[in-house]
Image 1 (cartoon, rainbow, N blue to C red):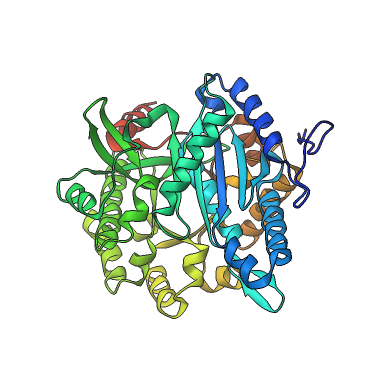
Image 2 (tube, rainbow, N blue to C red):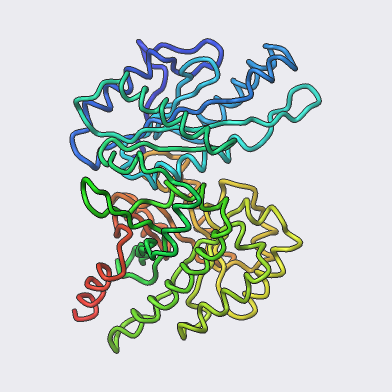
Amino acid sequence: MVRRRQPNAAGDTVDKLTGLPDRQQLDTFLSAALEQARYPSERFVLLLITIDNLRDINEIYGPDHGDYVLRTIGGRLSKLMGPNADVARYEGAEFAVLCRRVSTIEAAQQICDHIFIALADPVTVGSDAVPVIGYIGGTLSHDRQLNPTTVVREARLAVTEAREDGPGGCFIRDFTSRSWLNFEVTPERIRKAFEEDEFRVVYQPIVSPSQGNMVGFEALLRWRWLDPTSGTKLIPASAFLSVLRRTSLAVPVSSWVAERACRQVKIWSNLTPGAPDYFVAVNLAASQLTDRAFVGSIVAAYEAAGLPPEHLVLDVTENALRHNRRVLWPKLRELKKRGVRLALDDFGTGYSTLSSIRELSLDLLRIPRSFVQGLGMSEEDTTIVRNVVRLAQELQIAPCAQGVEEAEQAQQLVEMDCPLAQGFYFGRPELAEQLERRLRARCAS
């Protein structure tokens, strides 16, 4: 059965300009979320989206056009989030999004990525296409002792930190692991971390939903930091990637991840005589794609490990494909000729076209978490996922559903005959030595 929250029910208070719930109603939503948040699985994230250039738009085009921009952005956010989140206009140039059952900073960051994509298209004002500049600050929480005012205050602090990254900045605070939130990320500290071998690669299983067995892994970057008060922590990449990408280490670190991942998956494929030929998916940084040595570094990574090229999958985002097409596409085609597989990440959230899929002969199509989370709850999301799976299969591309967190979602993917999936329901990202114990146990059985 598809479950849907009915907005604007009796007693709701609505912002007159946008038709969205207002600040008072958001406080009601937050109070309910805090009351329900008794377990880590029921954590929620509150995101505040600030439109930074609204004042400029008002001064140049007039307040009526500024109001039109706000209505447009409010509509985009409502359409993007669907029935699985509460979207409100908090005040002035600020919107709020409350997403329940978001348990990690990585999941919250992924939602932010989708929001930035929704903001990316300029708003037509008169004859001009006006860009929208925004920042996102958020707080992840499940502490019942908090109140809505405290949660909003933490989100506002996160917006302040997001501004430091410039336009498009994003920062998520976590009430339950605050010890590293004050960890200052600087280019110098990143350089030292790389030199002193503080970076780690973790691996999240990619499975066959119908059989439940692991067939591959996604390699993800983490920073192993020694917290003087509470010991060693693995800091998620979302906490330092924005700084890393502005340094000269972005390409070396990305190449290092590819090398480690290829070597590790080759080891796992030789674990026992009956071990399957696993594949590994590696995310490509935008700066890596345009680097002159890009193709050579990827070839060197799988050749040094002795990994067949078809067991390496390179994840490319839709927006990366949109830019530097003349430079980028020939490199991807060269790797395809060598046998490396290509995946389009978060299909349907950016600027891809069906012609792009055809011209690059993609091998995998990743269905974003924002759609998968709606399986069984949103009729629209369920229809979208079903049709993307069908489209991919008819194009002889393997669809892979991301962000699967519940048994109901997994079962729907089985019924849709989706061959690949990943998410916390199947397994969290783990260090190689932790995951290897599970693999050995499975091979032994």
